Length: 101
Figure 1 (cartoon, one colour):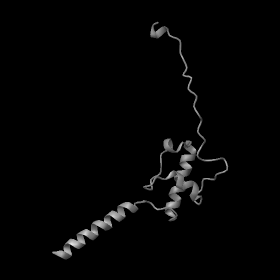
Figure 2 (cartoon, helix red, strand yellow):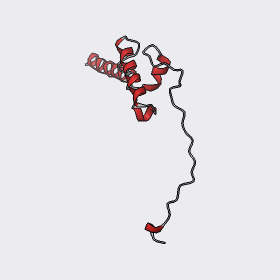
Figure 3 (cartoon, helix red, strand yellow):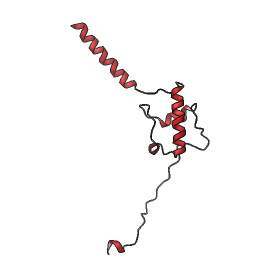
Figure 4 (cartoon, one colour):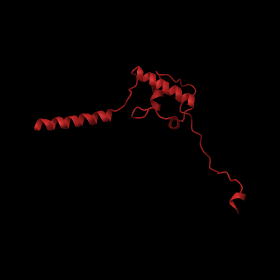
């Protein structure tokens, strides 16, 4: 049978619809830290809309809430604890080397 004459076959795979990450009762606000922290990466970056599975309007509101929380010092701008620890260890070793010489 020719490819052009073959009838369109739907795949029989069923898919499970994912639940939205923000419920109808959740209020998007800079004070709602439990909600906001779900949309921030380990590094402190705002996760993309595709990763969050949010609508455009929800993503805008989440972004504004995160930025307000950062300005009010409720959230850090960067979450770089590992980099800070690494910088301290490098400083210790270099300081130790200068003492020996």
